[in-house]
Image (cartoon, rainbow, N blue to C red; front, side, top):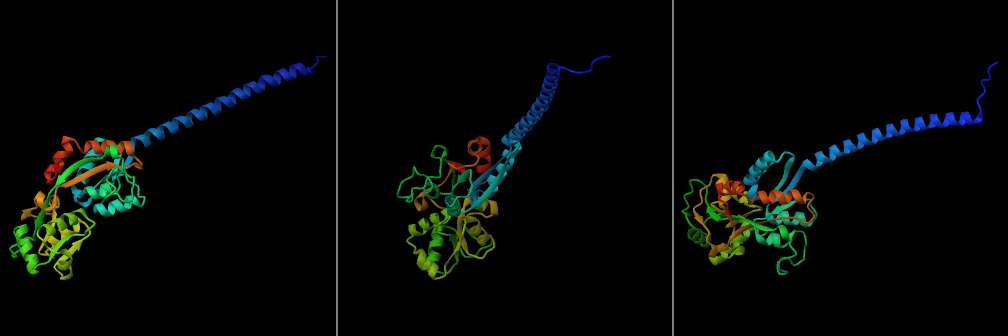
Length: 294
């Protein structure tokens, strides 16, 4: 009779071989699963690296041109999209100060940028705010302040000199930007140049205000006022023909600074876009509506 009993040594050896085989199979499956997971993660990371939404806070006067440039940039750089926030520079500055996500800030005046830049004078940045990456800050564009009247106006307002005379006579309704808006601040300088008392004129009902330059432009085009001060770029976009242009002596230069923020969610991509805004291609678009290089 054959003895089918298996010795303890043979049994343990068999179990050891089976266990090793099972372990190898399990390890192979785990390795395969891990490799698949890593590959999937790498693909997702690659896709994320190629897709970025740049958050750009820009002065309202840049609405049309920056939107057009953004579309071209996205076409040339697949995966890059934009979330634009256009408003008065003062409003944008406040939103940034209160913690709004922003990659790139383009102001219509130096004051609003200075108030966020620790490198600026303490006379301007009184709260010593430190939001701007000063190494990226550039003076990007120059604009012009112009006087516009509604189409078909018969008030005889054909120059800033004429505007000043009508304001003194208090026989017109004039529109300007609020005091926290760059275009409003430039207009205040023009009024001071002509020794006009803004507060007294406003109290007399001669002056009305817009919260940003687009609102001022709208009031002119709708003929709800007799005259208003805007940027030449906004006049161009609205189809208005300026009747006069302010000189440097009247209100200084209109410079648009730009900078990437220190807390920018997409700092490197923002720096690349800011560099693009300084190229000849972008300059052609800006110049087409009245901006000029600094």
